[in-house]
Length: 204
Image (cartoon, rainbow, N blue to C red; front, side, top):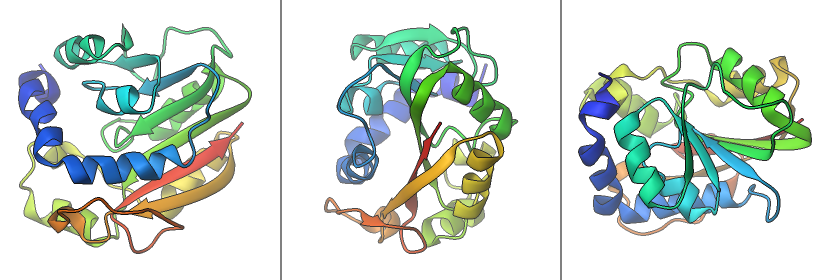
């Protein structure tokens, strides 16, 4: 059983305890999210982001997490991002939030994402930037049972993964300038380098 299955309740409660951090991340992601079309969140977890960003579909390997996502109105599928049970071109856009740091092969996941997206489909990747203060905190403190198993990436690495599979880079937003210390909702800014959380957009 994965750490996410074992600790689904704990994972979900984090968002209630850190509401302003969560909403700051949502704001950064929402800047790139299409207003129309059929979307999927890859690594949907308990459905927090999908619900907030009106994403109808979600896939995740954790059954216990998916149960919570279903209660939040997400159409769920059990499965891994490396091999998704969807036809080519099934979706108009895809979201993936901090999932990429937990998969064994990020390029393979992005190849699958590319495949299931329609022509001109959009992918938005949210992640903790490896070289940010927040990224360094998680790598050195090892205080999170979830991030203990994570592999962190820099913005340049994420951008190179996207371009390697055929996506065109279309911009970045950053937020969480005060890391986990922030008690107020932050407004995201373009680019990367200052914020702990970065959202990157790619277009097929």
